[in-house]
Image (tube, rainbow, N blue to C red):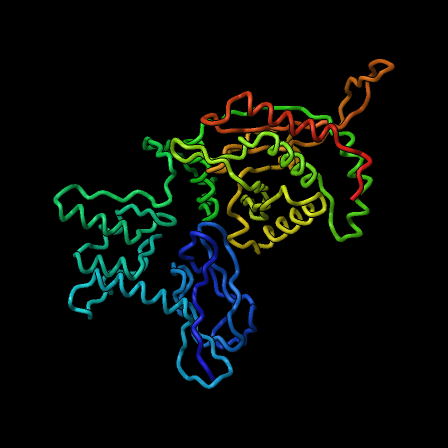
Length: 436
């Protein structure tokens, strides 16, 4: 038998650590290769982690709630083989060397000093072994750590935070907290918000926000502080599109795909972005970065009531069938909690279908660092003036509102208005005779 270390995998660009949410297997359980054995949360997504080997789960090294760096061991699996001691993979060994080197710099000549006096968890804060070792060597108390605002995920204190604190204290200046490593390129001055007092009575229910809701709240507030939002509205006559979709639903069903309005509208958005590429930009300080790829984020409501935005990468390279398959796949995996971190990264423009909730329009909040987001309202039958060569008449038409919110720092009303008008034009001019 061989004992093999399973390490925390790298789960996307810039994701350097994960929080163990729950173990799906118990010690002693038999597991297959690629079988999900635990659930991990990052600042991008919650996802299930598959086993790297087939065998028996012998030991769990990372408990629920632990924050583990990429490459660090989280479990030991017993497999068929000749070795009798745990064998770490090359990435794990490289990661271990890097961490040991960092710790060696911080530690004094006494290599036996531990951080047992500072727990890994205090309240809702987690402290990594490296942070605790630095605190031990520098005589930083647990109360100081608890009051130190961290720049890591969920306010966690990072190595840079505590080193900055130590440096300021040694220089005799007032200790300051390092700025978040992922701060926006254009710094924004945020006045300290003074929360309004809340009166709670015996009939009220207090519900604590879950991790995802806290993250959504923080990002929505940050987006409104970063970008001056402006919203333009256009009403579109989508009668021909509705008739075509109703006619073609059966053909798509034969291919195993449900044809909704979302991929048809995303196709129109992609065409409009080609016509107005300055909508597909991001702001980097005083620079405007025009993105080379068109990656469309689509907001998906989860069964928990939270919202997540998976991304259709290179949407301009997909036809309507490809967009339909991608929309259905991402929506299904989002609701089943099967999204990968890469599914949530790289978006350049976002679409939110508020019509699925019966809403006729909305004022969506921009997904940073993008500069635009489009809300698709409900399609409704309305009496409308129809112009024909024989004259005007009143007819029943299918209509919807498009609500385009954009960053007024770089998108003026003319561009923002023309863009959403162009999306409406593509929907109104939909070819009812097209085939798949």
